[in-house]
Image (cartoon, rainbow over all chains, first blue to last red; front, side):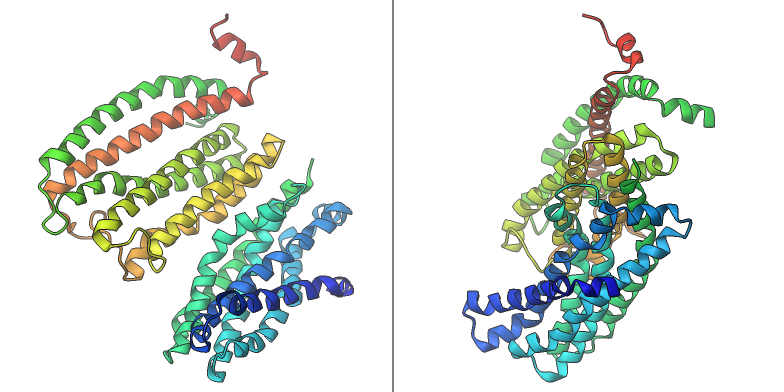
Length: 211
Length: 246
């Protein structure tokens, strides 16, 4: 993680991207403040999802190219655990900043203060699932030479349910209804992806590294 | 049993068996299609609300149900190939993907055509089943794109197998989406616990059409599997003996 922090520009990139994408919507649609408030939570969620795709390229590829990953595979340590730690560190560096900045963007859309904790909580759970699914996509394409677009195409359909429930939770909160349903669902998705994703990662990395 | 399994998984045997099975699927499929289409168009009474437009159901329902079925078969074949390292299973998974694409497109298209007069719209973004069926299409396409991006067939096999297994989480979501969220799409009326809410006079042609679809898919899968095996084993010695020489 400290190693990744040294590349501060890569931590900043998704965050800036997130801010800029959310900024584009009000400028492109020339919507009234009331309309902005309606689409606001959805826009913040879409922007977060796109931003989470941006950083996937740097997740495994450098390690595979310089041979670190090969050492990990041969090290005798359980590969799934190692990759899970890497995935969590990746989330801390790319997901958490989005969560921290999301109230700022949401306020920019005129989302009332009471809803902000729900947006943050749904994003905190959701970016975890996004990171897990994204990591699978990154691991699958690690030996494809130019894989960025492919990663996005593979991962987006899998991520859509997360988006649906995350945005749904925020939407319910906007209407003042209880949000526990979609939140529990997001939490269960997060747990499931934390349990299962490392094994998919390990399988994909093994296939990618050998030969 | 295991001996038989090993024999089946060798490319020459699979090639021969697929060739033998193909007509047994193809001709029943054509016969059942004709019978089912006749029954659906002339025998079945018009729906009491939707009149004659409900007849598109006989194309729409089997296509959408079997697009999921094909995805599951593809994922299972891919898993079998990944776990037991059976090349023929990978070849089968690879040959099922384009069939799945065709079925999903057909389901979406007939759904849109049916939705226009009935719901007043071609497409509803709020409807989970439509959206998740579209996602299923993207999963099929993503699987094919991932395969295409590797030069090495073995690596393509195993990477795409991981993707197919991960993507299978989408299948139950599509299947139960109509029951979880109430929306435009009607809930299941055929395969559900208890008595089906569809009238028997409308159900039996649907079953015929479904069986026709299954047979047709199996026939096409046999053909595609044979082509896939030919492509993979183009340098093998058994092939020279099996093919008629020029």
